[in-house]
Length: 239
Image (cartoon, rainbow, N blue to C red; front, side):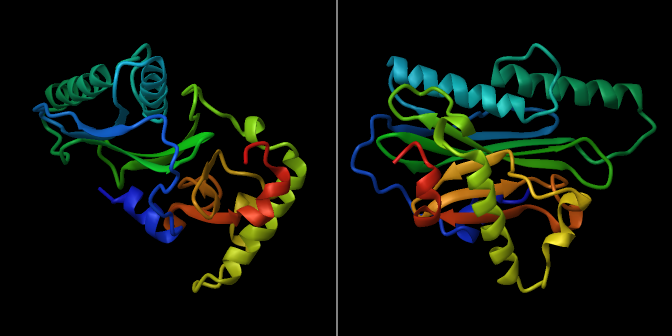
């Protein structure tokens, strides 16, 4: 499995959290159970039994599950892992003549930003059920630091059109610095520029990430860039 979180942090120069005000503290949780499939889950969990911690943990768990190709009506992460393993065993029993590699499901999260107003948690998931390659995704989850509720784009951007224009300019600038000499024509499959689904906070600015296949071919992998706060500030509702 690719160490996507580490790659993300290094490539975008995300520093460790430096804010003095930290209403929630986190532990790293690892699900230690034995499965026939290769399954791992390492994620950040808010400590304590306060309403804030419970809300954060519920939203983190729900966000993880939403990124996975899981059976319907699964709302508990451990149930999801168990269901994945059972699906793998069912496949093996049904197709005994097929010798496929072991299925894999890996989950990892990292708290990459924390301030008085917002938390940003990066989530990396990887699923492999045979075939040429697995399915890996990154999700940036923004949470209200005081309530633990999910923050959507419209909650922190006051002018989507203006912000999109700035994002496009920064995207093109990031391509100019790319050693592969890519241009915007290599992206978006002939469609106009659009914002990614994943936008989060870092110490230096807003991080924007397009997942694999979202704007380019699989070979190009993830596409990420950053808008410095001095460029993004006129469009932000959150300081």
